[in-house]
Amino acid sequence: QVHLVESGGGLVQVGGSLRLSCAASGRTFSSGAMGWFRQAPGKEREFVATINWSSRTTYYADSVKGRFTISRDNAKNTVYLQMNSLKPEDTAVYYCAARQRVRASQAGESYDYWGQGTQVTVSS
Image 1 (cartoon, rainbow, N blue to C red):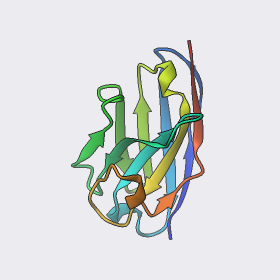
Image 2: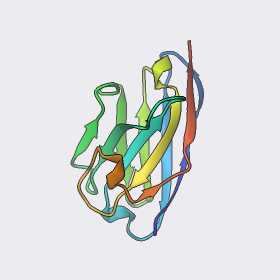
Image 3: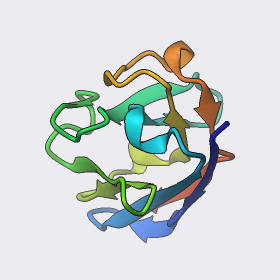
Image 4: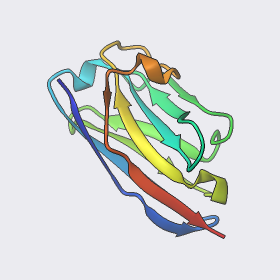
């Protein structure tokens, strides 16, 4: 079992930055891939970024490529999402997810555990 808790969300102006953190508990953290997803009001959940267990492989949604960076620290059981050059369309609840398989995945349905989410609001 893996328990995930996100933090770092908040209100930021256009062009600003935020760093989300996801603290995981459970002995399987370091061996599984992690991902970030988001859901805006009235929209479906969408993939943002994913990282494999060794940090060698990352994938990003086209909408965040070049602005967001996913990373992980297995010693701290934490995955991060550095978000720069934020836009109003980045406003959403951001969810951290963990899967038992080592390969990174963009498919939300392939993840086994989810956090409660953290709100990110970008004001113009």
